[in-house]
Amino acid sequence: MLCTIAPSSRAARLSLLLDSGLGTVEEVHHVRRPSQQLLDGGPVARISLPVEELLESPRARRHALSASEPEGDIGSWSPEDGSYVAACVAVKDRSDDLREWIDYHRALGVGHFYVFETDTAEASDWALEDLIQEGVVDYYYLPHVTPTTVPMMQIRIYRLCLQHTRHRHAWMAFVDVDEFLVPTNATQGLKGVLEEYADVPGLVVNWRLMGSGGHEGRPAEGTLAAYQSCTPVSFHDNLHVKSIVNTRLVANTSTDPHHFEYLGGATAFTTARDPVDGPAAPAVHYEKLALFHYALKSREEYELKMLRGSAMGNYKGMDFFDRVDAAATEQCPQAFEACRRFGLDWCAGKAGA
Image (cartoon, rainbow, N blue to C red; front, side, top):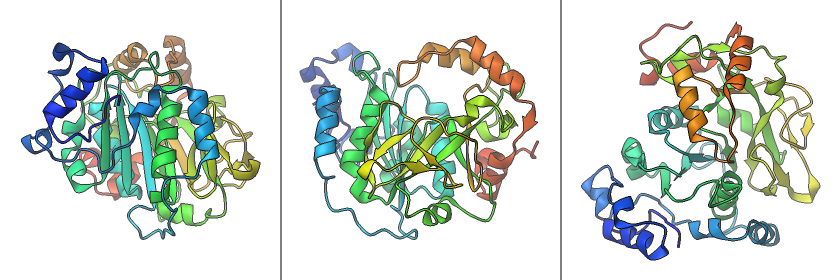
């Protein structure tokens, strides 16, 4: 097995790494856990996903997923159920941002989170300890899983989530930690929106790329308070979408993290019910939902992001920063306003822009 956080003791976790040949004593001793309870047997993941599958041939895993039924029976979920909506995310060196992202989406209506921390020297579960104990977060620390050791890493993590947890939820969102789902109708939460689209295989949400707001270094405020400048609707990159899949009707991942394959060759839809069969929509639609994409943040944070790379092994240069930031001439306070409505501390100390 590659590395899962399910083993019942720190010694077992260290042994797992060493026996697999993926680490040395020096490499794994610095891995910290947030409390003695977690060190000595507290569950970090409610279910133990077979993360060793990440090392198998992508073609073999893709075939296995297409040809097999999901584990367990897919239940009949109601929006009142805490497991109605889940999110699956791969992260790297994002402990400063991860808690705000989870707190916000939990308030929005996401009931469970599968967090896979990859390719990083320091675990971030210290920031999630209470949510792990509460059973809201399943956390997997995979320091030796990288886009180099596991090609198409992000897609394969998504596939792992889909295969082994889809029977637990009605919907599953696949968005990144720098992407926030934002209801454009202040009176409607995420569950209410998804109820209206129970008949579609998947709901795709357009990006709204956000600017740096003139920040050179990381600001003291959270993401939603600090960054409210945005690109216009017509900005070309906003055609890109991310997916919230209907677990009854989704068939598989695709070749990119933006869209999925669906049973019977069906397609996903925008909230305007326009079909989308690819990583981008033919037009931008923000009816009911938008996906605010904080791809830049401050110049300092963006430079660190370039060094970190993406979960797909993609790298963007400063030309992307300059192009998006120059286009971010509008103000989009909707995510910040939603955060304040939710009463989250991240947005309590600053008036809207």
